[in-house]
Image (tube, rainbow over all chains, first blue to last red; front, side):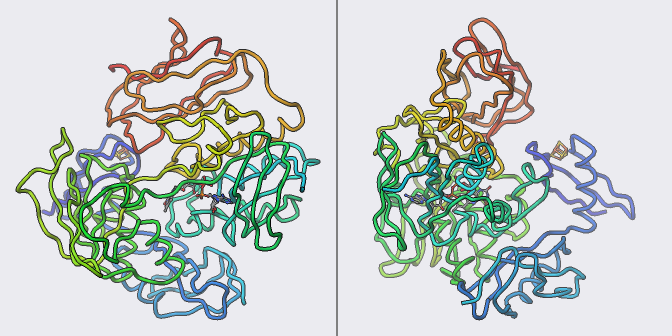
Length: 120
Length: 415
Ligand SMILES: Cc1cc2nc3c(=O)[nH]c(=O)nc-3n(C[C@H](O)[C@H](O)[C@H](O)COP(=O)(O)OP(=O)(O)OC[C@H]3O[C@@H](n4cnc5c(N)ncnc54)[C@H](O)[C@@H]3O)c2cc1C
Ligand code: SF4
């Protein structure tokens, strides 16, 4: 049996949840609504996040371009995702929404530009 | 002398939405945005994290993406933009003096003016922490710009003072950029930041957050070598002797609040609220000088950019209407604040208006299970229970404008 304490972030109430895993049964306590139940289970079994960062741009008017993962990636892969972004470069011009790294760190999710960057 | 119908000062999210709405309301009018930076978008350019636009676009965007949604609407709209143009002075009769890289010193006669200059961060000077002034002390927003736009990491071992959203976001950004964040210290017994940011920025990265703590001393001569952190008495907010602790760090990030940037406003003789540090406005966001409107962070500090866009739409539309129709007349009701309410915007309302009227306000403490009440004389116009209200989150109530017949009072009452 494993218990984890966490804060539900889905609304300003910020309920303190106690999520307990007992075999394949998961129990959520402390939530004030059904959304909190779902959140507790998701956070315990498969927490995911959108990762944002900046990537180096060659030949641009600005040295960096902001980027994000196009969808959520497993929380455990965040370091690898950040590392992959740091190790790469984009070439100006860059268009908002352009895929700059496909399938980043094997997550199946792409890194896309979140701003336009003109060439010099 | 140039002539424009509507001149918008500042090209952040507030200025953009105001200009777009002014032009929509009156396509024949000449609308101009003046922005001192080389690009539009304001502070959003450096807010590269996501979480913007959930209310306004029903979609989660990063700061630059949110700004781009508005910037792309300028194309073909006929709205003119001068970037690299800093406004130096504004007069009561709506003459705008600016200096521009391209146009030199310019004077513009404006039919209406929308103030959208945003805010700036409080700095350490305003806080008076004892110690020398070594390198390594930054405001969180300045560090955000360095890391996100210039690719420069200000330091390797960091203490953050203040747990507002910018401080929380920067604690994660510094960690994600390879630095270690030793502590986030918060003077108050609660954070003004969103729960979501406390969890996803601090808890996710095992960064400790201490409430009722502050930095009492800065160490180091040329470069910061550490800070002394002490616990404060929750009642007096004074450091408790004996609770001091030295933390080694080469970087201190200050996230201790924002102040509306109102030098131009004051120069024009517009009355400023001592509580919001922004202009006193009516429901159309008109200041007490006719034809000059204000919106966004220059009016009061917003935590959600979505609210900024909404407010700017009101101001932009009103500016265009003013050019067409002149000033509104009729009796004015004051919006007073009672128990538990720190401020409300707008501060005054024309009686007998049409449509819906939104009142934005902040509470002065964290409250659970209280009622929000709006009274006019002995009449109760609105009475609503709220599970939770905190000073960090702006609240909004909506009433029918036609119900306003006399002065209003907004207050909290027991459940
Ligand atoms: C460092 C920082 C980080 C923030 N992070 C977040 C966040 O993560 N999430 C969030 O929702 N909100 C955040 N905010 C709040 C954010 O400021 C607002 O949501 C929003 O950007 C306010 O829009 P605005 O247009 O009023 O101001 P701004 O975005 O500040 O835009 C004001 C513009 O006016 C221009 N200007 C000012 N004075 C002059 C002048 N004299 N002449 C010409 N131009 C001028 C400025 O250059 C700027 O472009 C942050 C604020 C700061 C300061
Ligand atoms: S459990 Fe429900 S009420 Fe509690 S924070 Fe989560 S969403 Fe809000």
